[in-house]
Image (cartoon, rainbow, N blue to C red; front, top):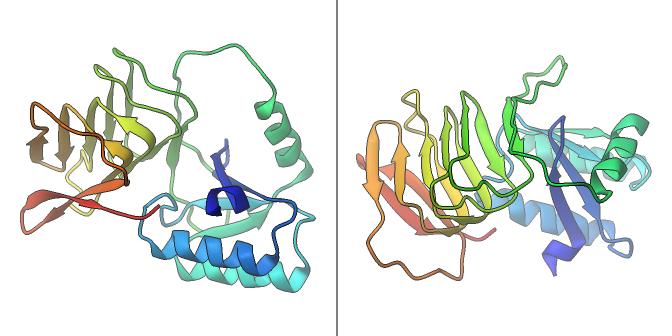
Length: 219
């Protein structure tokens, strides 16, 4: 139900939110609050979050801004250009090779760069960046992601993933189904067992007590 109330998509400037037409502000608020407090990592600190311009009353939007600010995010209204671009991106188009570049947003506040990939990474494809990475798709065997920050995969991860590649031990890796050939965080390495069963819940890999630990989380 929550996925129907709030939909999240990576855009050129950051994360774009859309909402069910019949959803009340209270329902939207509670859904976003749960996502933020779940620690799923989808909302990376410092990320720009854009919401439709005419969706909320002024006082409701200010409440939403405050909620995101409390969790280290920056909430802004979409411009007309943003909304037009979002409609264009939703239109059918031919598949394109995976190309990712850091997102930079001009702002007086610091906005963390983030690479957003809105497609599945196939074998042989690689994302290498100093930023964090969000993949809205799968990471297939033979594909790899090497990120200076954290990695969030909205799909199944079966490739090689390396978060905190420059030595950031606070980085983490999240996937709806975490079944990689190899996980690396900072200078630590963990290999998957030969036989893995697909889990029903998303999982988070992070460093605890000097080793990589994988735990189930709520999205």
